[in-house]
Length: 116
Length: 112
Image (tube, rainbow over all chains, first blue to last red; front, side, top):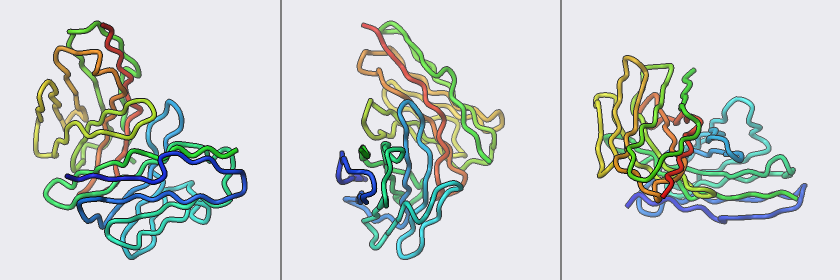
C-alpha cells in the first residue's frame, strides 16, 4: 500500500514551452502533497506544499507564477512548469502524506525534466 | 529554521562491515524523523520512521536511533552488502502533516 506515482518519468521540452507533471496517490487519499526539486548530487529542496481544494504554499524564492500547482482532487496534484528554461532542468519529486498516527510521507519515483 | 546535516557526505566500506550514518538537526522540536534510500536517478524509498516519542526503530538489518535532546539520529546497517550501495537521506518534520527538511545525504559504496 501507500503508492505514489508520477507521470511522465522523463520529459524533454524546448525552452519557452510549458510542461505538466502529475503526482497521484494510488491507494490512499492525500489532502496534502509536496513538490520537491533535486539538482544533480544535491539533496531535495521543497518547492511548495499542495493542499486539496486550496492554493499551494510556496517556499521562499520559488516563483508561484512559474511553477503552477493544482490539487484538484484527493489523489492528484499537478505541477506545471511554465515558460521553461534550461536552468529549470532538474529532477522533480512529489510526496503525499497518508494521514494517521504518524503522518508518513510517501514519495513518487520522480520526473526528470530536461529543457533544451 | 530547521537545518539538517549529514556527515560524512560519502562513505566507502568493504562488504560485511557495519555502516554508521549520522544525521544532526538544529531544532529539537521535531514531530518525526525519516530515513530514506535513493538509488541514482530514482525516487526515494522510505526505510524507517521514528516518531519524536520513540528512541529507535528497527527493520531487518537496519536500526535507527533518535536523540532529540542532542539533535541526532543514527542509522546503522549491519553486515553491509554491495546492494546497500546508495545515497541515504534523513529528513525531519516539525509537525504532523508538515513538510520535511532534508539533510544533504550520505553516498555509500559497499565494495565486494
